[in-house]
Length: 59
Image 1 (cartoon, rainbow, N blue to C red):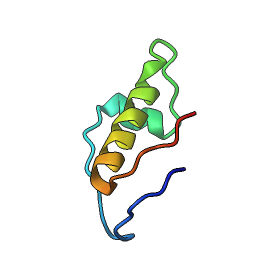
Image 2 (cartoon, rainbow, N blue to C red):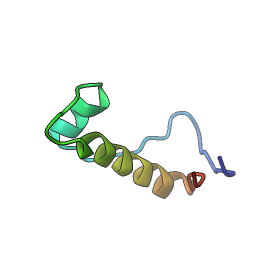
Image 3 (cartoon, helix red, strand yellow):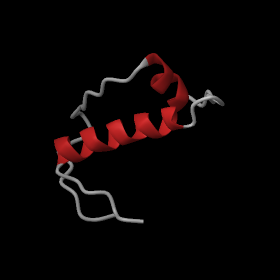
Image 4 (tube, rainbow, N blue to C red):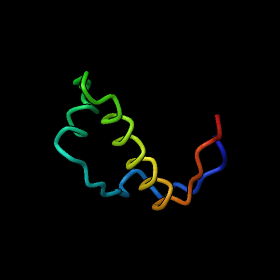
């Protein structure tokens, strides 16, 4: 990963997830909608990057 500026372990980020997105992050699979987990992960990544001035490494 690229360099980052992590403030401390006590800093927090806030992310609004739908109930289905939250469940998908716990491992529940939604066969009818495969994008639920990906959507939740994108929201978390975006909030982390905004809060900590962090850019994820390109794959």
